[in-house]
Length: 352
Image (cartoon, rainbow, N blue to C red; front, side, top):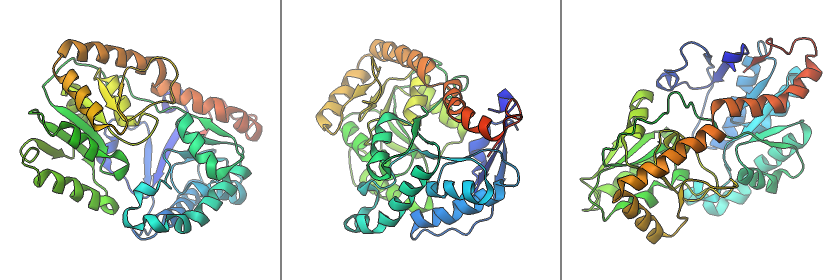
């Protein structure tokens, strides 16, 4: 957006400066001091979102909200500023709640009601895939949910056609990524496994869980490495791995898998049924035997890895670039913003 002369700021309660190394000053980040608690975190995110909206309201013409999504209607009502919630995952997935799973229905009911009321009261909301849109609609009902596909910086994530013989899993150290399945698939092979992840305090238990799996296995303890790379290091890991594993239990590809594909790497994934036509990944679902077979086949055949990698790179360039993402986002918001800012749309919009 900033390259299109649209001024952009990120308002956040927490900024990991290592994640903004490539912004080159194009996007200003404002860190807003907000009290946060691990307990009832889904509900505390509403307080955080409200505070961020208040801070951005003095500056922005349009807001895109990435957490505490039901607070989007607050921006419209309080400040008359369009605010579009962006759903990136199904935060009510019972598998995310561990020991609290039996209480999920009661715990999340009020928040689901708020989300539903919000989506029905505002013009549009964003989702990152067809599958996620279907999931969100089960509790929001009516509402205009627009698919904005995830985009990859193809200038940064590009192939170097290096292959150093290790398997990589990357992303947040979060239960949605289901790294246990990847470890189980690779347990009987001799090659190195790297888990490159971002640790979060509220999901420290999951990182410790993965470490216990590795430490208690004679077959994994000396082959698995946990890393917390910065941007440059993560890019290098992806460019140099042989195969990328994406065992997250969703029917759409996450950003980490798309970045690996942009780097020309073959991806073994849980599923990705929301994309029509040919998709150059290996889908294995819950079947551990299929994960094992796919990994064995790919690690034994470098030519096959190279072939799938080149098809993966082409797929990303055609469907999942930053340009396509921004085009979809701006196309969806243009009419809404023209109605509100009829004389100041071209080059004047400010987005928080």
